[in-house]
Structures are given as structure tokens and as C-alpha cells.
Amino acid sequence: MKLFIQGFVFSAALAVCSSFAMASIIEGPIYDSISNVNLYVVSKGTWSDAEADAQALGGHLVTIHSAAENQFIVDNVLLNFTSTSGPNLTNVPLWIGYHDPVNGDGNGGTHAANFVWADGSSSTYTNWTSGEPNNSNGTEYYAAINWIYSVNSSSVGTWDDTPLAGTTGYGGNSNGTYYGIAAVPAVPEPSSFALLGLGIAGLAMRAYRRRQATI
Image (cartoon, rainbow, N blue to C red):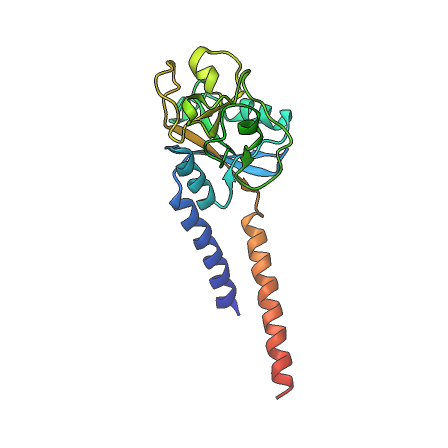
């Protein structure tokens, strides 16, 4: 039984570690108590690259449902991490989970209405920069937070639609590709995994004894 428990806990830990190895974590975890998720900054890439990294961690690119959640990201993610050998995220765009899966839907209200969250949750809040999303050149279907601030240091924490690999030619620090913000549901402490393993082992042992009793 002891070996079974150890094997279960080891397998669970190995699965978690393998998933983390698949994604390139730049910063995190940063626990967001508002949404009960751990936030991770994943390495630069296209929006799809960042979403794939987020899924490898067990989540998606971050969903933002309120002004409080948006401000949490501004206060806790859009920071200068260079003192701990990380990047300066104060003035660069970062991918969030908002995207428009309907290509060719113009640059007006239909384009704006077609944006959805990568985790499938409903859209209850937006924080677009004034005039956005505008689908400039008909290629902007992916949302980044802090894009306009990266260009001209205005409107920190607002959102802009950009191409899959980010924008080019707008100046500042806006050239793609971008880091992504992954949101992973908060999980129990390792001790909780051990207790879960004990519980499952106990159930298995009781089931085995019941089977033996009927033989």
C-alpha cells in the first residue's frame, strides 16, 4: 500500500512537472485571489504560442472579467522584474486571452462583438483603448494589454487588438512578438495531493477486501 501511495503521488507530481517543462515560464506564480488563479508570464511568441504555453501549464491565457482583475494585473504583473533577473514588463504589451476567431469581419461593431475568451467564459468586461478594437489593415484579431502604453506611455493597462505576432512599425516597445499572461486554476498544496492519494488508496483497499470477502 505504501508503494501504491508513493507511486500515485510521484505520478501526479511528474505529470505536473512535465506540463511545466513544456512551457517557458518567465515570471510566476503570482496568486490572484480575485480570480483564484496563479498567473505566469510565459516567453515571447505569437498569441497562439502563448496560449499553447498556457494550456501546457493547465490553463489558458488570462481572462479578465472586471476592472479589479485588470488592475490586479497592472499592479502585480506589469512590473519591472530586472532586479530578480527578469524582464521589465512596465512598458511592453502582453497577450491576454481575448481574441476574434472570425477573420474578415471588418473593423467595426461586428469585429468587437466577435471577441471571445480562450477559456470559453462569457465576456462581461472590456478595457479597450479609445478607438479599439479597430482591426487595422484587416489583420488584428488578438488582444494585448498595455500596447498603447508601450508606444506613448499613456493609458496603462488598456487593451488593443493586434496581429497574431504583434505589431511592427508603431514605435516604442510595441514591436511583436510579446510575452503572454497565463492563468492556471489554483491547485491544492502538495500535502493535499498526498491526502488525496491516501483517500484513493483507502477506497481501493476497501474495495479489494469486499471482493475477497465474496470469494
